[in-house]
Length: 100
Image (cartoon, rainbow, N blue to C red; front, side, top):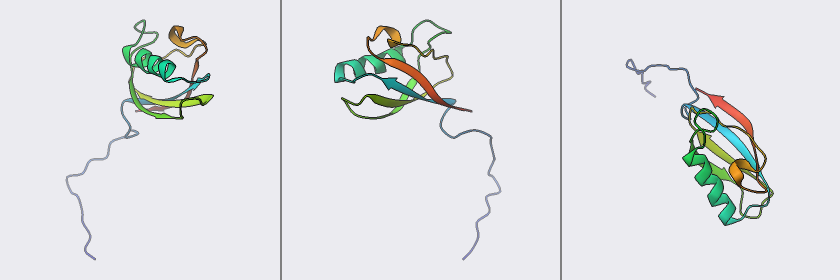
């Protein structure tokens, strides 16, 4: 089998996922309304430099689960909190961060 050599390739350090990717855990019994509120809060952001807007890349879990994981991308700051952004009964924690 012939080999292919890419003479124009460039190696760049990074995770391939985006600028920064974080995995969040949201605990509390999820309803569709509460999950919509969490996604809206994450994508809208809050106080700049404290709780910046991010892009939701994926969600693992289902309505009714006690813990749901959300993958978000963005370089802004996220602040973990109980009753995250005023959503009663939902606690948010940053589980993992993949930095560029």
